[in-house]
Image 1 (cartoon, rainbow, N blue to C red):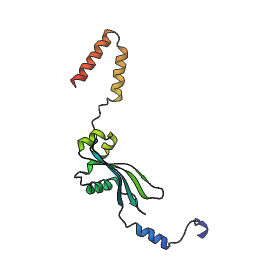
Image 2: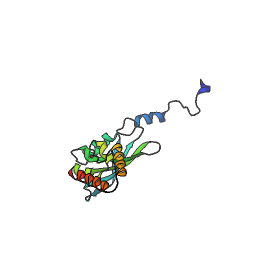
Image 3: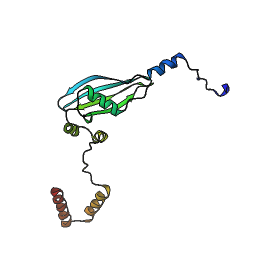
Length: 160
């Protein structure tokens, strides 16, 4: 058995025991570079999550904790992004925005972040097939027929 054992294998030591003791600690949140951005009606900060010997807390847990700390009634107003864990673990750093209300958040936040909290903006994009057929129709018509067709399209767009 000893021949198949990897070279870095060590028996359980005191060092291991201290590592396992650290696992029981709850992750700590520290906010730094806090700034009140009144033009975008939000608070923004860098968030450090300290979690020695433990996996990173979920975005939902971090969002709820920040909402409690900053006196926000709805955790949907807290947006987290760009979280990166330091090499070796133990510390994860990212950014957080806390908006004053949901309307402001919808105005300034990108759609992919709104999707994460379940508040997606309605898409105005026409599907691929419809775009292709209208392009083909536009290319096939010529002269006064083309003018009439473009007029109809503009009128239909105005009516919607």
